Image 1 (cartoon, one colour):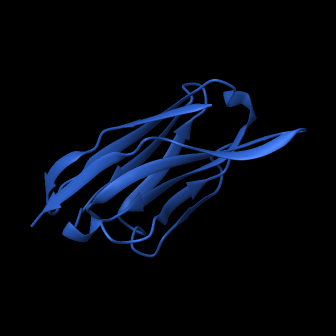
Image 2 (tube, rainbow, N blue to C red; image 1 turned 30 degrees about the horizontal axis):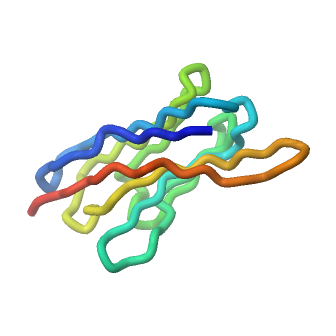
Length: 119
């Protein structure tokens, strides 16, 4: 499985960005997926997660009410709509896919996309 994030950039506080995570390879065995972020000097943290069918989502407290995670399995793509962005949202954002088949379970990560929110 390969994951490629896109959509990051520089935005002013209060603005919006939409991140995308395109999956390729053995995507039929991808289960839940998530968005994580890592700011300089901080640990990587979960921002939002979504189940395989998209029926259930969960968010970090910092993301609730502002971010929306979704996925389009027909396009093998996951999204993160980020609204009302704050300077503290500045980080590298990574997508993660949990792969599971009868032989192995493994988490795949993308290379990350930079999000910078200016005040």
